[in-house]
Image (cartoon, rainbow, N blue to C red; front, side, top):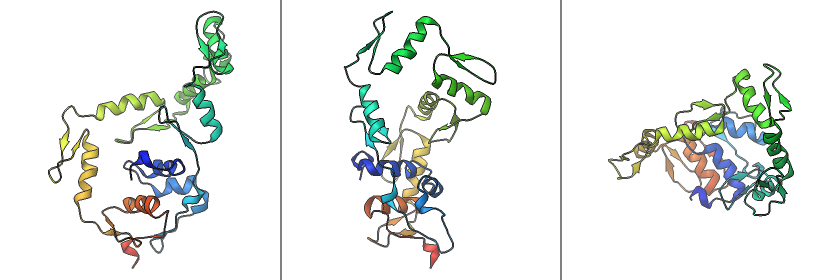
Length: 228
């Protein structure tokens, strides 16, 4: 099943397991009902029903965590922008956006950094600036795991991983734009020791078995080959 065909309620689970991490601890932290994780017998019960539900924007594909955030986001795509700037031709769908825009004309900067007293027109700009003082880097590249303080930085960074000439798989002929995805794919050609108890399908990694159970069997009991 393609990630683009997944139900909205499962896309958030997919986010935790997709790419190369597949971390059990992420899912346990986000969904308290499956916490704590005990590996004493090599088994884990995942409760898909406890996962956070959300919606996907049909215009740009962005995932929203709630109906209210989905509604706010969809206003950005609407041509209905009743809040107009009296100084220029700019128009906005929400009044707070207009308020922030007007400050570019007035020069007002009501948000001050308590560490260095630098001023900002928007609170979001102050929040990003504060990461310089705290060292927080919440945005991580899913290929090399390098962290960034600003989301747009990691978006630009990902481009550096794209090869001009695709790397072909010598086993099946598939081509890949970066070395990491190529190496990850090559794992698929290795011995598959992790078996699904429900349908018998085999996988070469435990996290791939977990993905399979979540998507195909709605989170049935997973068992490691080491638990026997």
